[in-house]
Length: 480
Image (cartoon, rainbow, N blue to C red):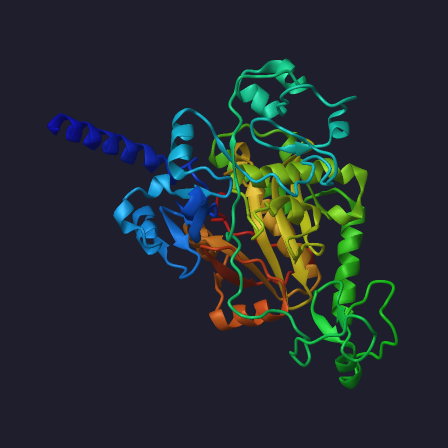
């Protein structure tokens, strides 16, 4: 009996070490849907409580508290079982113990592949999925004449695993298929009702007839208005739903026109003062400087414009964001990054007003940001990133300067962004941002679809008003 007890203790120790991998990097992703199950009568599986993985614990769906797996089990009323890892399951039915075993055997975890878009062109449709990372592409975008037989791997996964051209073209491999996990609750939802008429602040609307309670959206700032409130306030007297674009004010109309002109103008050489920042960074790091630092380009893109020449740039920007960030996840479990880059609506969120700004060196996108302008008062920069090999070389500083100069030319007053804790000091000390007051953020959230991520602080700064469209860059401009 004593030996048996010792063996059990050893098993528990091994299991404890095994289960730790679930909460380590490359383990179970934050937002993974979880639930505690027990066997009921006639061997039916019964779900007791739901939650999602966050950090080193599980956030309970009923009380929003972060609990350890053992506490989650006790919260389900099953404290006596003392086997949370064998009773807590993901949305695909696997127990936490099953997933830990799979991770120990070299399997990877990937997020739900539903509602995907082609990583090259941004469209949905009949997609081909990488067997390793579940990246989605159209066969036509890869110039494949027919669907590959067997397992197909994207070029990156084929190179990483030494599979060569055979796996890329569709031959089977022995690599275990990744565990697909559904995510939830990574995007922070407002704790109050959003939207409503910008004039009367009421939420009622007519959906079947055109009358005073019909809602009209501004095509630039995205605020909503009752037709009757617009007439009573003297702004305009609409007799029917506009067939073309509609703007709530001259500023929104002017900003929209400027954005469309910038998109159609395409790639532009950045000003010399911005190139000097890049040259200075290269000199500080002892890096080779050639003519490429003098012909760095930038441009503003919009996925809805459907310019063929812009699709490779948008695809590159999406790849940079996915390289630098974990998936930005909606309540449905879908990654929002492709939707934001290509200006699509997904999971009830509309990103048609989102523009992608990129910096290009030798025809390669090295830095990118997503920009949305909510009229003259405020703009947001929810996601920015630079490829790892080009970080610290001044490229993002130049891109940010281009963005700020552009906002200044439109007389936009302020710029806001969500910042992770580790980046707060860079944004506040070097870029001049400050934490936005909670009351101000709530006011914006009630009127606009501002982007706020869980675990971030919302920062804001006054846009530097630039005479003659020049920007003064500080000597201590930070590295990315």
